[in-house]
Length: 139
Image 1: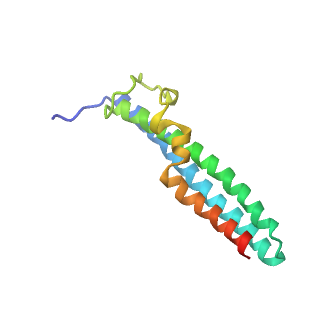
Image 2: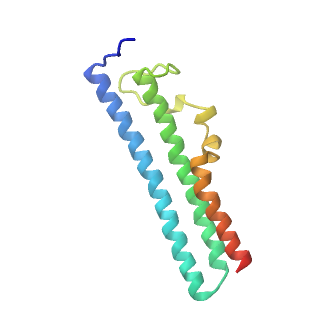
Image 3: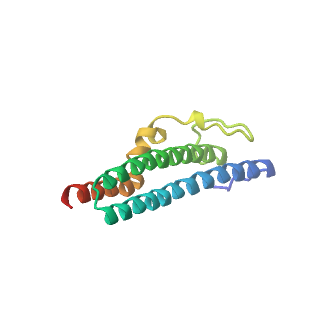
């Protein structure tokens, strides 16, 4: 099978989409970093005061960052769909040159709920919440 050739405009379009995907990925990574930093600070306050409420308070930003991280991964998946269609990898939607239409990608792997429960998200945030609850109830 012959390789598909792209015009300079198509290549630039793919670069624009890849830039958006990279930004979403960086934002997702920063959400994890901020979650760890805030949770660690609240646990340090708990350790110095022995006030269990700080452990429960640490759950709140963890859940908030879970939702934010899910949002960025959700957007990243949608833009990957745009990229795949522009590159000709898939043919789900017809994307015009320089159009970025993540709104065309809905349902299935592009749904927010699907992303919220994805392995890459759940394996980061759920253990943190379980550990915080364990600290609260056992210590």
